Length: 115
Image (cartoon, rainbow, N blue to C red; front, top):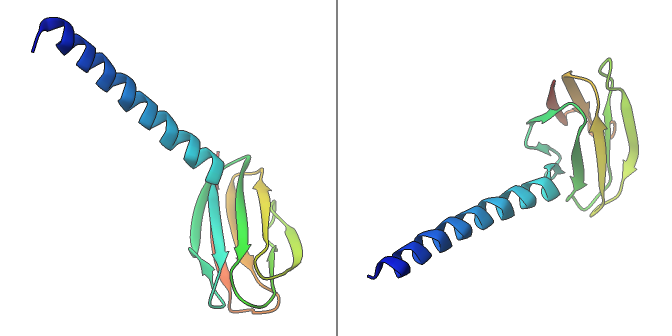
């Protein structure tokens, strides 16, 4: 391979690698953290997000659920969440939050919010 072609190939490889890394970062930023309600359970049962970050709750069961947290510093209640709907919640303060469903009391998850 000629020297000019080798340099071009190396630069092209670096550019392609950077573009792939950027795409992966953008895809992660757009999707964020999702907790699914499925089979009368929160999946995953544990999640971590930075303070100021959001978690999207998506109901994939064929019936309604509720998502709420009685935890100090993170009290919220999104009310009845219909099937195939999703709601995003922003967690502003660092701490550990228990998430529950008022309709199905055995449904619980833990969210850790880091500084």
